[in-house]
Amino acid sequence: MRDAIEVLKTRRSVKPIELAGPPLTAAEVDALLAIASRVPDHGKLTPWRFIVFQGEARLAAGENIAAVFKAAHPEATADQADFECKRLARAPLVVAVVSRAAPHAKIPEWEQALSAGAAAMSLVLAAHAYGFAASWITEWYAYDRNVLDAFGLAPHEKIAGFVHIGRPERPPEDRPRPPLNEIVTYF
Image 1 (spheres, helix red, strand yellow):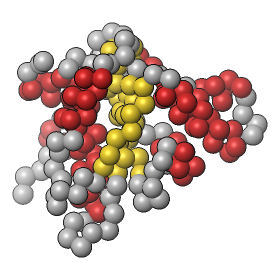
Image 2 (tube, helix red, strand yellow):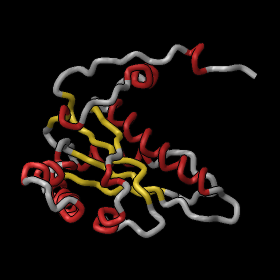
Image 3 (cartoon, helix red, strand yellow):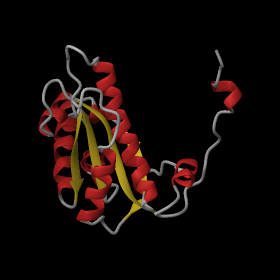
């Protein structure tokens, strides 16, 4: 396990297509999800949950994505449909972080949604700490109600992101970060 400060300073997204196997073990997946669940959660509502896609389930889920895509785009080519089918098969593990934010008498929905975002970021950081790489993305299917229904989301649930996890094919390159003087003000 790497030093926490070094993990925070070196975290970098890696494109899902650049994440390789072998697949993570059940113990590794459990460890990542346990860490991801240790986030601020005002009211102890657990306003998020996880859907794990690994092995053949990635392609089975992709078939749902492809079916929705083909219904919306009947002119789509076989190659386009195949691409959609493999959306969740680009990395050995994909975790959908589902926001369950809902009206509450004391806890604003915004705080609940932020908790789901914190869970996604903690998952990304945990993957990096364990020597994996990750990419937190949302694409069109994260917002399509037909796909969400196929994945078993309740009407009020939303995808906070799909976190693709694997081993980087090569060390990720850093990108320029904004200078602090451009993003920080003091009151």
